[in-house]
Length: 94
Image 1: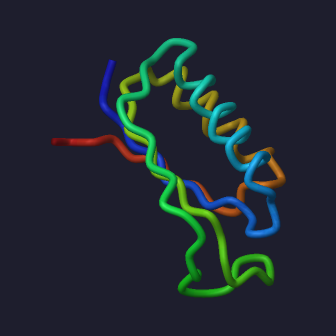
Image 2 (image 1 turned 30 degrees about the vertical axis):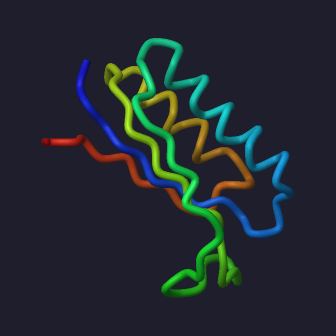
Image 3 (image 1 turned 120 degrees about the vertical axis):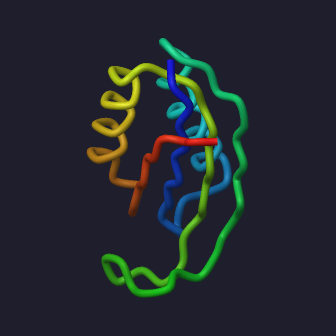
């Protein structure tokens, strides 16, 4: 298993309960074959530029250890989720 980190932005019109449900859903996908080491819900921030006519979003940063199959499944689920505006999964070199 390798170390990864994922940063994703959730739509600003999502309620707090739905936001936590999404974070738990994505952490559950990671936990199915990997392990979450740290989850940081940064909060609502202004975007540097408009994405789909949205100016704000909830930022979430997750550090985890997983195999490439888990990372591919996480990426697939995040891409088809309507609440997620943008994602970035990178391999942690440190």
